[in-house]
Image 1 (cartoon, rainbow, N blue to C red):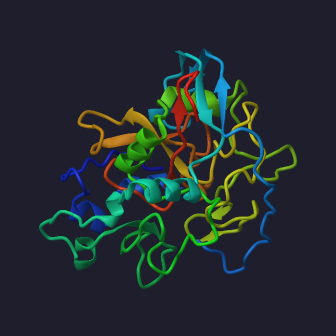
Image 2 (image 1 turned 90 degrees about the horizontal axis):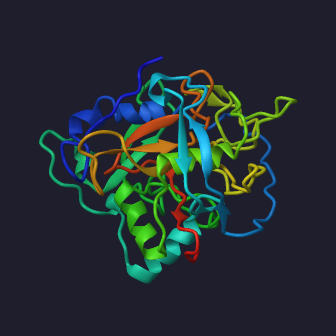
Amino acid sequence: MPANRVIMPLSPRRPSAVLLAAPLLASLLLAACTASPDQPTARACPPLSGPAMVTLPGGDFIMGADPKYPEEGPPRRVHVDAFRIDTHELTNADFARFVAATGYRTMAERAPPPLPGAPAEMRQPGSAVFTVPDADDPRWWRWVPGAQWRHPAGPAESITGRDRDPVVQIAYEDAQAYARWAGKALPSEAQWEYAARAGQPAQPEPIDSGGTPQANYYQGVFPRRDLGLDGFTARAPVGCFKPNKFGLYDMIGNVWEWTSEPAGAGADSSGGSHVIKGGSYLCAGNYCARYRPAARQFQEGGLGANHVGVRLVSKVGAGG
């Protein structure tokens, strides 16, 4: 298992051409962790119900408990004050309302800065997209021109009819812009992990006592074939699986979620790397197994991907 690694940008807007091109995004390879030739039976998702946010009481918990990788520990007692948190990941519909109200354009929609030696495709607006490797192209992650939140895998994919899916292809700056508009904030890593644990012991894999998947993650041999035993081989509509004890959906799996936690020196509001949490539909037992509350990955702030989203928090007493 390779060690977790932070990729720091050489540009405040985009990673270097060298880092992206060969192979594209080593940090995303670690975060990934699709399609199956035999499509599984789709899981029926119940209607979303209940509040959009819940208030969590303050308390102490052991952060980094049961670490699987070195960067997750050491286990330490941490206190968090009471806060409010979204019950589900930010959706395409949520982000569309923001864009309609503000005219905001995400980083993936803007012209990238010139990068010496960049291949032609990386001189166009776009983003990183996971692709099942094949004999002609062994890369897992590729820069796809036109990939953005409305077209997560590129122009051939549309979010039309997928309002309830988590919005992806949003960089850290984009997530912050939405948070400011909504009067909310990105969670700290401690807030996120406290919410994900919900006072319960962490499970090594999100399955029930009968072995049935309880989250949207990768079942099969990554990156070749996702068996889709959970009913999905890509992003799932939010709230398809049972919530945790705090009433929060998809804290494990589906899409990684941004936190405000810098990954190291040099991180700021738009550049640098930040911690993402929760794993995604690309996390598999044979590769990353980061579908646990303590798991953490470093994502470059200037880059979105088709498996990274966000949920937000606010102070107790704030609206939302």
